[in-house]
Length: 114
Length: 113
Image (tube, rainbow over all chains, first blue to last red; front, side, top):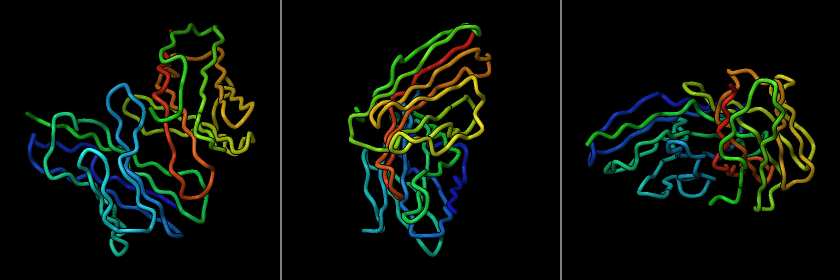
């Protein structure tokens, strides 16, 4: 079985400050983990994915995430927020030996203040 | 451009109308998905097809009827909808293997009046 919990429904930061969006997962097997971003009135776009190679994964637009098996976490970070980062972010888990249907978190809304 | 195209992007329909949403993927994938996204609610999985066979129906009302004629095309037929069905409908595709990446279209905004 697989599940994912996004620990914050909203995160508010000032432009130029670091971003941290938290995600914990549960997986019966080795998981693939993903972060997606959804800008207003758009579909979901893949930011980055972890599939068992390096535990620190770099994605688009300066985002990165670190897979921590001992903490069952896959938090998304960015050193310096930009106004254009304001969006909804989804953490996703997919067992690599279970169902091919991924499980989505409830989403975290990132608000960036000027 | 993700390789998943949805049409129409916007649809307004009356409660007695019949309309369809179309999705096409150009990624050579085998699995296709319909999701519903309503304001203030989590993403809801509606239907999944893998190799044209329906593998998931998440207790969706019968006024939503999916069709998957081949691995590249997916339709969602709509009839006698309710105002609460107004939402963003997202189509997605993947290779249909555990751990695969899922790719989304831009969505179809549906308003039921």
